[in-house]
Length: 269
Ligand code: IPD
Ligand code: CA
Ligand code: CA
Image (tube, rainbow, N blue to C red; front, side, top):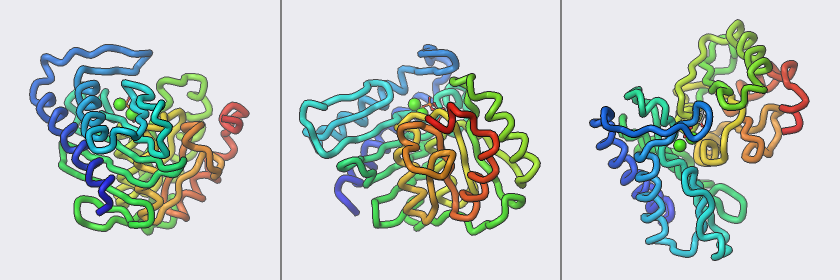
């Protein structure tokens, strides 16, 4: 295993320990609303601190982009940047709905090379190294082989923060609802992407994500033989935050399905 992945796993498991301990005591959890419908708890912050400490102990010169702390250690001008979401699915966590994860990715010269998505409630550890395949615990994972949208389990996230996209999104949802087997909105984008990578879900789309929601899951999907892109099938999804990920056939089918509903704002994102 790549030593940088080993450290990322250590950091994710430590953060998972913080999250699991707190999950046993949700009654005393203080929740703050950062922006409309965007919540943070002391658990997000504590988990993030544990991750950053673990990574910087091993690699003091690497830079960091973390959801709660922002950009750290930029002065080192490192070729390496860790992209961290300490708790993806905070709303689920706050409600005791056990679908959330720690997401850690390493970017080297602009390319994601290591990825960890860890679900501490289920002890599911998804990992990938660029060129080395993707794994769930010790087992190699692949995207699903399903070819038709009508038999696909489609995942999505709602644009609950960027209300400007609600109408376009609902038009997409209405069409896909009538043409897919079923749709899920599980509430943790990083874990959703890991589910696509492991074939638990066939294809996924969401508007308005942040780099820390996407980075680790994107590598999991490509290393599991899948495709990830923006809503038009192009690159640049880390900047726009608008993504479609799935196996080759269903990725293409979903990109085609949503194309008629793309507004100029979504096309130029
Ligand atoms: C959120 C989750 C959710 C997605 C949101 C994200 P957070 O992350 O990934 O599924 O729909 O856009 O912000 O805030 O729980 O880390
Ligand atoms: Ca997130
Ligand atoms: Ca988060």
